[in-house]
Amino acid sequence: MEITVERVRRLINSQFPEWMNLEIKPVEKSGHDNRTYRLGSEMTIRLPSHERYASAVEKELMWLPIFKPLLSLPIPVPVAKGEPTDEYPLPWSINRWIDGDTVTHDNVRDLNQFAEDLARFLKELEAIDASRGIPAGVQNFHRGGSLAVYDDDTRTIIEKLSGQYDHKTLTEIWELALATRYQSAPLWLHGDVAVGNLLVRDGRLCGVIDFGTMGVGDPSSDLVMAWNFFDDASRETFLKIMNFDEDTIHRARGWALWKALITYEWNEKGSEASNWGKHVVDTIVRDYKQL
Image (tube, rainbow, N blue to C red; front, side, top):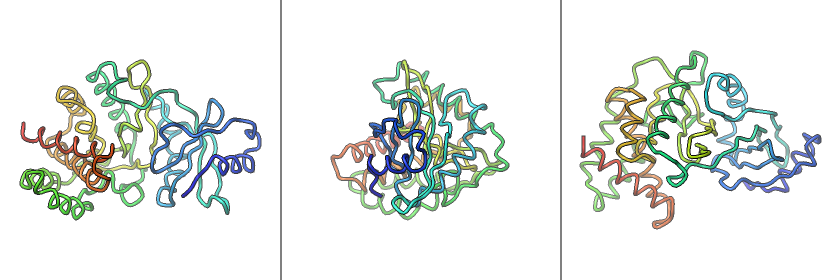
C-alpha cells in the first residue's frame, strides 16, 4: 500500500487535530510490515503496509501496556489508535518515540555484553504470564508455532542451491529442526528479533520495538540472532543465558536457516538482502559442522 507523508498528514489532521501542527517525517529505516513516521519529537505513527499486518495494531495496543512495567528496557508505548478511512482502510497507531539507533556491528561496544542484554530482555518477556496470550498461527506468521509450515519453501530452495551448498548438510540441519515439537507451557515471544527492531545507545541495547508478530508458543524463533548477528563467542554467551535444551536450539537454527534461505534466494543476487542471506547460511553451516 502506498503511504506518503501527505496521506499521513491528512489522517492526523482529521482524527487528531490537536497534533496537526506537529512535524511529520519518515524515519530512516521504516520497516517492511509497517511504515513509520515521526510525529513531532516524542511520538511515532505506525501504519501497516498491507492488510495481512493490520491485526498487529490491536494486539500491540492491548499487550504492550501490560508488558512495559515488567520489562527493564523501553518498548513502544501506545498513545492512540487511528481508525480506517476510505483513503487508508486499515487501523493504525501512534506510539511514544524511543531514542536510539538501529543496531549494527559498528555501534555495539561489546558484542558479548549485547548478547547478555538481549538474552536477559527475552527471559523477562518469557517470564510474563502467557495464559491469556494469542497463540502462534497465521496472525504472526507462525512464529512460536510449527516450523513445518515452511517445509516446502525450504526444501525447494535447498534443492536449487545443491550445486552451491552441500545438499546433505542443509537437509540435515532442516530435518533436525523439524524432528521435535515444543512440549512445555507456551511462552511469550517477540516474533521478530532482528537488527531492525533492536535499538542501541552508547553501545548498549536500549530498546526493543515492533512487537507485531508477538504471540505465545515455542520461543525458539526468538533465538535466530544467534546466527543472524552474533559471532561464535557471543553466540555461545547468548544461548547459554537463554538456557534451552538442544532440541530448542535445533529448532532455532531451523528458523534462522529458513529466513536466510528465502532472503538469499528471493532477492536479487548481489543485493544487500541477498548477501545477508548468504552470509547467514554460511554461518549456520559452519556452526553446525562444529557441533
